[in-house]
Length: 461
Image 1 (cartoon, rainbow, N blue to C red):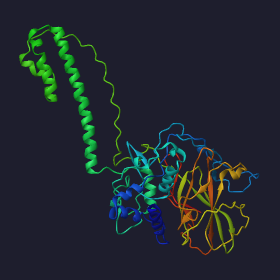
Image 2: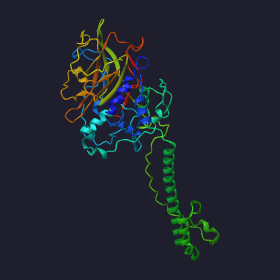
Image 3: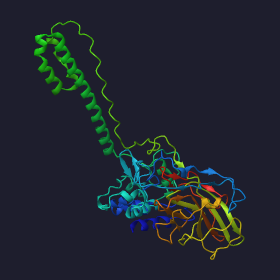
Image 4: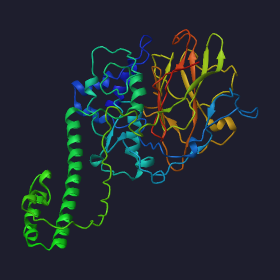
């Protein structure tokens, strides 16, 4: 699958020198191989999201865990012990099945990542909201091309800091993580000159049509009242001329006032009865302009993933178990761990997590290992009904070169649950930097049913 090849190349671009990676394997395919490869970009962190939605699962709370908990952890971790039941239509709310909603347009996030493979498989097998989707896939509309993807193909990629730039559509040489961080904030592509001209022309045409309709209605009403009030044969004789002027001439000649030179003196007209106000025309949905701060919900800040990383267990000379706390409930995650570069893919182990500071050594301590803990386990709550956590990249590729890609495939009988990750890092592997040996990277993203979440800052140990 081309998606998998692109993801593999992108994550292989991560190195100790450049731990953020690049999207060039994707954007340069669009630019130099086939522009229709942009059709692979069908999802984003905001897909299936409704920022106005209220689900019990998002009532996460800070918990100072009691001594009765099955696992003893630091009390400043954020957990969510609820199970989120997803109905096919999520209580009837309208959400994008593909991409992000930008006015009446839908676009992907300008990258190929875990969200694209997750949404593709969900659509193919009819999971969750996709159950009622048209099954003739060739007739299913997904997203439009962003139009700016090919422009991001460049020869030199640098870690440009664009935190002070309000729109990223014209920025080419930024890292994969910087792109992810900013595209959640500003998910809609900028309009091209032609698209902008078309949008403006449509808007002006609509506005002018409204003005002309109002003016014509006023002047025809005036003409009728003049005829009824005056009873003057000369004015009555010009009534057809008035209609002809109103129908055929430009706006500045509308109405009977062009005929003032031929109109006889007449008594003052009585005050015209106030005409019923014309209903306000509904706002025409448009794609956001370059200055939009957040196109999904104008003015709303991006939701912070808020992930943190802490030591869960430590074995002298062998390695460390790190707990990666993900505070809420996620359908899919694309999380990068700085200081966890490895030359082998890592699978997700379904073996239970061990107790805090138990001195547990994995079977192969010289290799990275990945496990998970349901938030409900911290409180001795049942987890039997929770969905299965897995990777759309296959059972053996849950983590590649420091990028963790996991999902929960949701069905009515298997609700979503919050979870944390446990990562074993061998002692001989390099750290990120002296003052921050390991961190959850800014730009890590999660699909949370509320418009997407993004890690706003590096969360160091």
